[in-house]
Length: 114
Image (cartoon, rainbow, N blue to C red; front, side):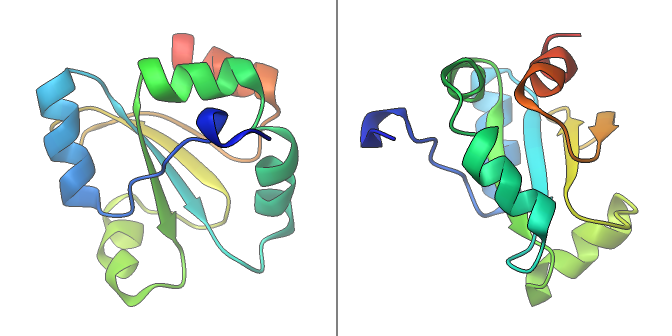
């Protein structure tokens, strides 16, 4: 995929919330893990899709959290995340709007545009 199209994921929740407040968009949180096969499938087939890339750039603040990182534990508890991938849409106050597990590009776009 060309570098220009690649989404730059934020990695810090507080940064993402601050950004969301500034740009008045929800945060899309992708709870993922290196060992998670469906996460890797999404990395290969879903996130690179141009329509998805466009949505991530224009409609949300994209945040990826590593399920295994020590600093993610509080957020895993806060949002009651039980498996990966868990994809959340939260508002700038950190209130959950929608949630999903593994989705294809079409389902993801639906989730974002509801």
